[in-house]
Image 1: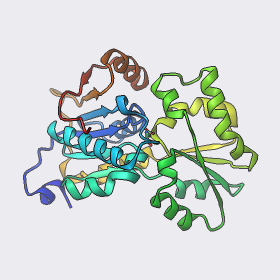
Image 2 (image 1 turned 120 degrees about the horizontal axis):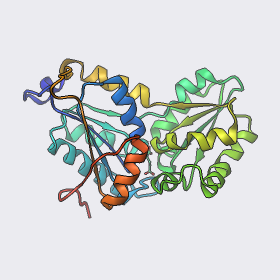
Image 3 (image 1 turned 60 degrees about the horizontal axis):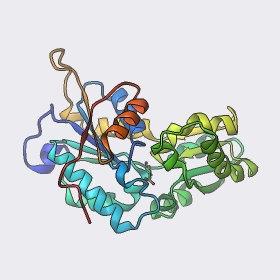
Length: 279
Ligand code: DGL
């Protein structure tokens, strides 16, 4: 169903796509979206003041996710991408029942990983909430027939990325300790089941070596988004090139430095004022 059919109100093709995450991890999804959809305006909101979501109670994650989507719709979003696996497993059903624009969400890339493994052992790296979810359980039953699927929580990984420490000694120690049991079990394929972990690729590869494949679902999510908005794509306009806008709940100087670094160019980060508190 197209957005216009869905809502009953005309949707402007020039309206932006709204993307949110518990923090900066969703930039890995934003990058895939920018590659897939070069002409769309994108609005990103990082809830870094409340990251990580992974160990938070379900009610909290749901309330934050609702607030994020309301914020993005307030900025005119014609579609939403939940660029957070944890928010997806906890809140996407409620979001889809409350908001009538297309909502595209994450799914850990277990199916592709099962297709790629030669050792028949794969590891799924994700937060506690994601690994405990019905959707991961369902994927394991669907695709785990002939492959051993090891679910590996990664405590501290999100904090390393939010703190901007992607390759330091402490980050390498934290990454190594989660990967050790997977390497011992012979995993040759690792699913990045949290959008923050894409920023730890180099640290992971340094530890597991180039023979282990890392699988990220961001490109598939971007393709699904393109399909969902196909009737409402913005066309290229040389007078008004596609742009990205960034918002954060974190202190702006910190947020600007980190978002600029991870996005790969200097960006302006705006505060999220009002309307986002859920306490
Ligand atoms: N990027 C989020 C995810 O994909 C991180 C979760 C968290 O904040 O704990 O799950």
